[in-house]
Image (tube, rainbow, N blue to C red; front, side):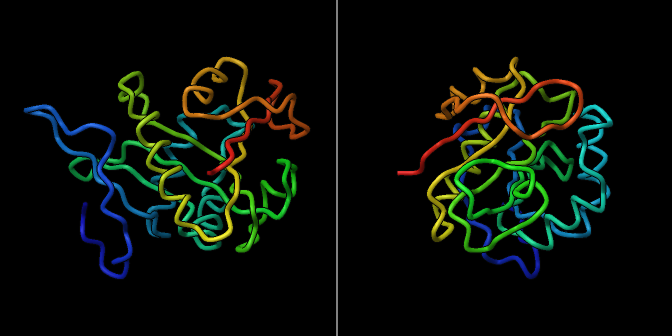
Length: 184
């Protein structure tokens, strides 16, 4: 873990496997507002323009829900992130995508992002697993909700999510599917 001044509550949780000889280790930390531009650029490289969150939205998510925005870096380079906000709703609705209820029982994941050059290495699965582990430490969170495109349903199933059904949330041209993982 990197020591970030003012963020001493970072949990030093290792990723699912130790680095192999010659590999650099992945550092996890909570996002800071100062990273908004870099995070928004990676989001824009990962989603179609009509789906990607803007820098202002990324900044607002960090400000409103700082312990719901996990960043992965290696030797200082941004590798990816997972972010969300809390909602009192038990289903993922449009309102949950643009607001944060700090006492909400549902954590609504907005983005799971990995740098294009680091995809297909298992980093997204490992980052999501760490995010879910840290979510357990958030008092009152009972479940994690997200929306997924059809081609990613198996990725989220492998992380323990179950398909709820077609999502009522509309973002971009493609249909989305709501998924849920109950925290035990």
